[in-house]
Image (tube, rainbow, N blue to C red):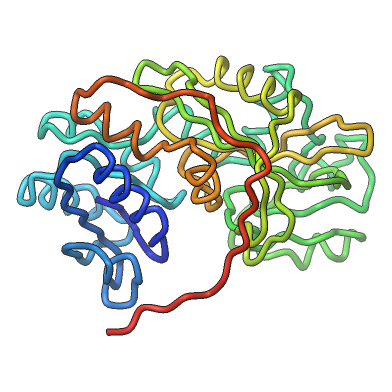
Length: 315
């Protein structure tokens, strides 16, 4: 089941394609707040309404659905549901259902951009200097404006803005805390990584984000860059409790030196490009779920170009 399936039709199709490759029958379920408005829910074999991911009703409803529908694998797709699933993973395991989510410790770090910055610094991975708004206002830093302002727990590029003055800081959305970060020019990359259930990294695929729309890559190309691949291995080694699909984002300066600025403990929006290049995370998840021989590998194709376009579902 794809949880909070939304528009993740390509991800759903990758699982179906992987099941066909394995020669197994796959029933694809999906859930969302309003399944009748979700293209992925329309495309699923069956779809279900779900409570808000951050509500107390979410996990009980998903456990009941899992028991009733005999779900073997749940794939979360949005940041707001990851912590709930990670904290309840043992309850799903008791129902013989695997949730493809990392540990709560990893999820909490990845959901908090200030904690992510501290984690990267401690791991010796180059990243832009990052501070809280309070640090700047109290002059507890030598960083100076302009800086990049981001919601501390944001995603999909929501609320990101350049901050040029203290007056702008006061105008930032007060509904959630913001962090301030060095703005690093350069080419932008996402690196998708796959870790097996033992936490061993099996694959790392960088792709350049040539054009982005609403926080997701619209045009991208796979690149076998040695620096980014090395960072992927180092990062995976530091992520105790991580498994399944994760990704991180980085900028590369004119000298070819990358700097990591974000970690996502889930499938990235650019996964269809990774899948097409031969890194079939969905296939490897199904193999693990079914107890089949593992075929995960790092032998993917570079220079695969993805050009996205809009499509529609009609009901």
